[in-house]
Length: 72
Ligand SMILES: [Ca+2]
Ligand SMILES: [Ca+2]
Image 1 (tube, protein in one colour):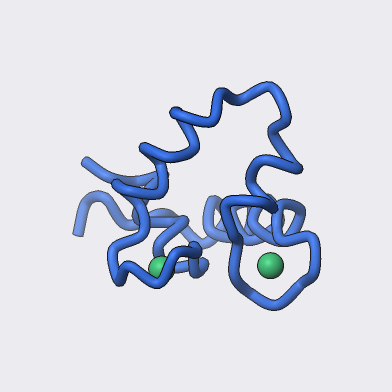
Image 2 (cartoon, rainbow, N blue to C red):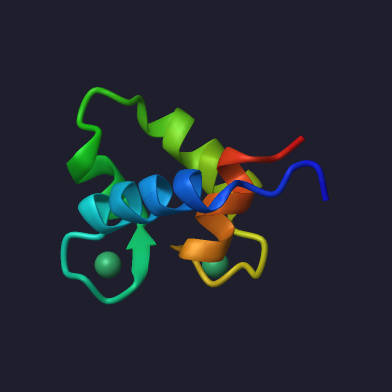
């Protein structure tokens, strides 16, 4: 698949994800997202959630995060 990130890029994304995941449980919640990007408007975060949370559990897994960043 042409949209698959390279290994190097994936490592960067994993670092970014870990930085946002404040409690380190492997999922990024809306609150953690807002804590990491305090300047981002709530509606922008809400729309990220709608687009990126593909299984609808209200939080981002790393897989969903990668898919969000790399959505075609
Ligand atoms: Ca978390
Ligand atoms: Ca999810």
